Length: 331
Length: 236
Image (cartoon, rainbow over all chains, first blue to last red; front, side, top):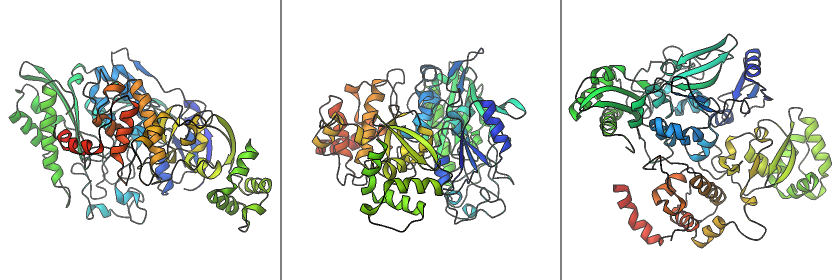
């Protein structure tokens, strides 16, 4: 990696000022994705601003009855927090399905949202990549694109956002709290990540100098029966080919409320509000879930090597909804 | 202390190569080198270096490091602690696993400069004098290694695993998040999932699982039994 200067931020304000004054600086907390990118020259910052010692390490109850996750809480601490386990097991299970214990011990809530795609063409600087160098081209569009997007992609970029944690966050209507040179603001998680469009170099709607301070979970009582189903090439320590976060709220046989989001299929965690709308009021059975899955994948545009993802996603949705309707747990 | 460590590491070719390159001097036999000169020249020719204090295996170490130096490189090339191995160098193999403040991490994915004031424990710090850590002994008892390159990381990961189970940490295969398994009831599926961040290309996995079972107070099955049981477990 290139060399850089190193500064330890003393407060959120200090971090924002430093990042605003040096647009070539990068904030670092857990660093599990960033250090890896630095090693292969994907990022070449002039300065690293270490925010890992700032006070954003608490999980607290909100006045609404939800939970606020500090941006620097580790993945392990979120997954093992008693309140998260009890009220949002869907989030615990998604986090525990991601990476390895060593990574989860270092990786943070804020960093998880900001990790970048693992598209091999993005990672290999011998190839052009519109995400790395806008306008240079996208070899994945016609190359080996087995891992790539089937929803929301553009002719500029077919990469997927790799996070497991973000999928239930999208389903739970989580809100990202950020602080920047213009003050604080809140961004719904579903609006935090961007589709590639003509600017695939931008993963998120964070503005220069802004940093994530927390992620707020609203109360979602039926999230207790939520499930996270992750399908991948090996049973552990691999990114998802397709993942589904689903939570069904039943009154007898009738679906009162439902949440459905997918990972591994798009440039952002993919919430399917159309499928949710269809499901509400319907009877919870295989035929209904199958129809919802068809609706969720209606816009799918598979690439040369990943058409299998369309059927895989439909089956995963059906199974996740079925298990959630039966009370949740291990899928 | 610092001088002693610097003298010790003259036998490490990695360190010498780096220091000499940095100092811009010609390669010379280790015995001819004046350690003080190397240190001084290195810091003079690298204005980007900063003073970093690391606590490794209970000893305080002071190093001049560029901020880009990973903890793994600092441990191996500067402190001569070559037990932690560099496998993939990308957080995928686990051979570099060490404990920081009691938690296992990949030392290749973290910068040394970020680890000041934290307690770092490497494979070299696990034994108590000549008495091996129980996990080390269990790896020997159950032949949890073949080539052994991944073994230090596997052992550090296993030591952390025991502590995590004692603290009630769950894994993705834990059936009930409200009651994670105790040590004595830790299943093979749990052990495998919890050690999945460490790869062994010799696939000494059965011995490693048996070693962990031994330290949890369970009776390790014979390797043959493990192989027979595996497909049944996967079918469940």
